[in-house]
Length: 243
Image 1 (cartoon, rainbow, N blue to C red):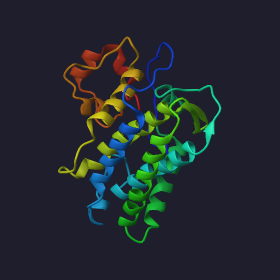
Image 2 (image 1 turned 180 degrees about the vertical axis):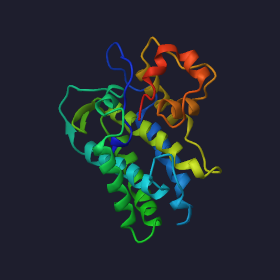
Image 3 (image 1 turned 60 degrees about the horizontal axis):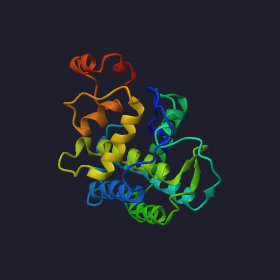
Image 4 (image 1 turned 90 degrees about the vertical axis):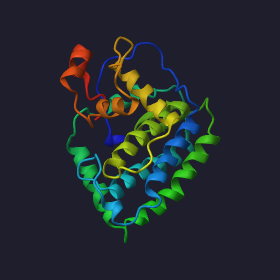
């Protein structure tokens, strides 16, 4: 459920542009990356903290599982075009700061995850659902449209939103798991393209930032340093681009 990360930021001029990486391939890499993080964790490790306030690993995994389930529903229910948003403007439909609805969702996720007899139950459900979502994405009509979260998107743009959220939450999951694998290159490229779009054509990130640092700072996971603010100038006021 994409309410967990939300967007503010500068304009994105011009017509919608589809993601450069084939959507189902990047999504497969993003979801496989999360699976590689959680598949062999024991119940104790599934209760480690994440970058999402108040959520343990199992809680956050349940949240991302909701995205995979949403993908299955959307991809099985094609919508009529035209698109109302693209893979970047989609994020501007959510508030930039945490609000009451976000707090309610966070609490719902915690209670729902706690309802499992063991945290590993969430992992089993994820491992069943994520590959199914990827298969559905691979069979979807790239020229088609889907409806989700009250918006209509082109299929490639929809898959890009799922990939971006999965990559960001992959980085959230590994906060207290230093030996866990990082997100894959193709998936990260899609997420970085999203952040670049939110910056607009007139702004660029500091040259010294790695892709991972860019994602963490663009989503407010890491604060901007004084040097960052100097290099970004007035663009620093747009951060975080996603909450």
